[in-house]
Length: 112
Image 1 (tube, rainbow, N blue to C red):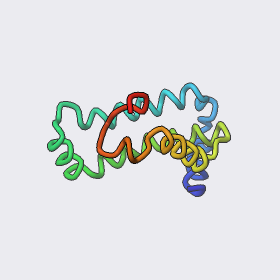
Image 2 (image 1 turned 180 degrees about the vertical axis):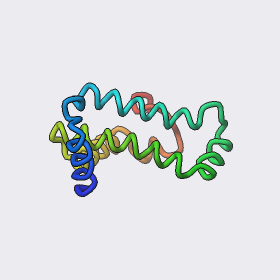
Image 3 (image 1 turned 45 degrees about the horizontal axis):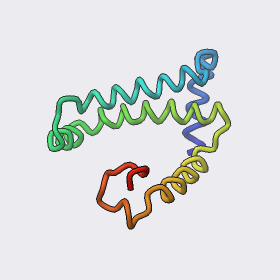
Image 4 (image 1 turned 135 degrees about the vertical axis):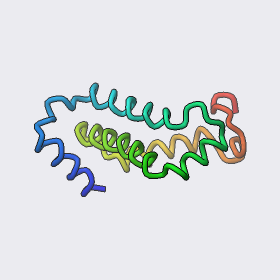
């Protein structure tokens, strides 16, 4: 992934956009792009959303990429090793949602 982060930095720096890419604006951008991804599935039921994702794979991929680009840049700018952060969070989630209690249910960990 480092090559992708390097490309994001290069893209940003060639345009002198670092001045706009503070944590608040990047976090807002993640949310805005996630909302654009969500909008693709708005008003569709489960089956329709699956069909849409298959039929519009490239468009969905572009929106997912937008979210990922801002998220990767935010982590990079804050000096957060995203792989380590993800692994740490997965360990926390594994403790919160033990298989024997959480398998097949969508119950929040506080109610398991």
